[in-house]
Image 1 (cartoon, rainbow, N blue to C red):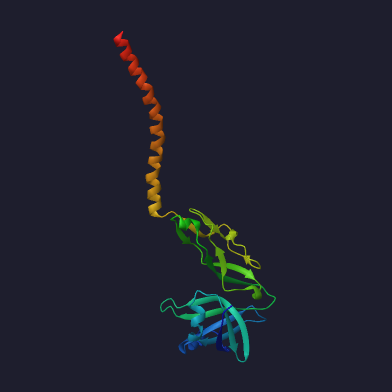
Image 2: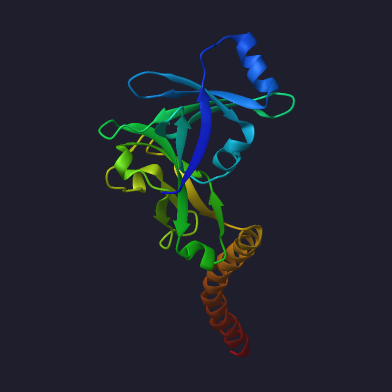
Length: 222
């Protein structure tokens, strides 16, 4: 799994005043959870750029005063006006301690429903899982080859070894729906299909009427 390095410094002071001072120096305050104790630190905002502004799931090696902490992202806070990163929470990876993480989904295969003219709708881009750090990986692969028109793949359909998936099992993560063109074609085909049996039923009635007319003509000749 991809890993980036973040070099920062331990924070000895906390509170609003100390936090404002850090941000004025373009430093982002943060906290590392999950280890023996919580670690308060700060690092340059640019150090988080490739870690925060990406859809990829990755680890961070946070180096603070000679000690390295292996972490994953836990939570973020952004300024409501400027949208700048103002706080970050990380989770330390401890070998024998399970962690909760959001793992991106990678869809593979060509859906049957799409081949038949349907439209693929992606409803979830990641799954929340609980696992040991050694089993964490960049993505969960979901094969959509057998996904048919009007079909769904749900959370419960994803089978991933060593992961406890925490999302509700019935939530759909992908579906194939009818396109507008297919709906129009079906709407046009329906009346035509109904007309065929009606025509077939009318044919015997018309055939039965012919002998009756001939019978009337026969009576007139006598």
